[in-house]
Image 1 (cartoon, rainbow, N blue to C red):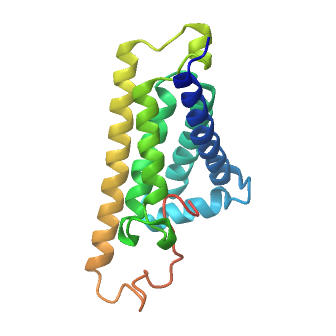
Image 2: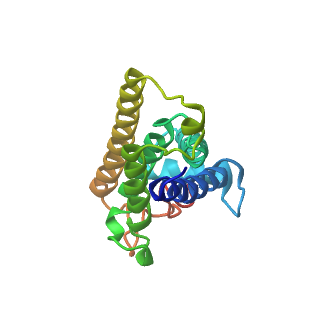
Length: 192
């Protein structure tokens, strides 16, 4: 018999997993009024995540695949860890805009990151594919997944910070609003 905890985990998994899977489909295929892979790649290039096409695909697949795994409660902790890594990078791209979404800040990606971490720690619950089949990933694979996600996120964050530093050091490299001259505004979450 499902408990209120299991129902709460199910609802959290469906909301976070469903939205981020759709967000990945926006990046990869232009679904749900998304920008698609070409524009997303250009946005990632602008952020310093080069080659943009590779990073756009990795982010899109992480969101689409990780979101689907979270929603289904399958392959735990692959889904929450993939989403947490992606949202850590997305949060960093919004830092300069402050904490609130109203000013394109990091509120939403940080909330998604916290939710992914909570679902990782709590597990998928009994109303999940893992719970229904009684299967789980071996502990050693859990560690490997976490180490891989941390390493991938760290590389991405370093690239973003390096690109910001290089832009800040170039004389005359920004327009009157502080945006890079002649380049579209982009971040890891929108349009990328």
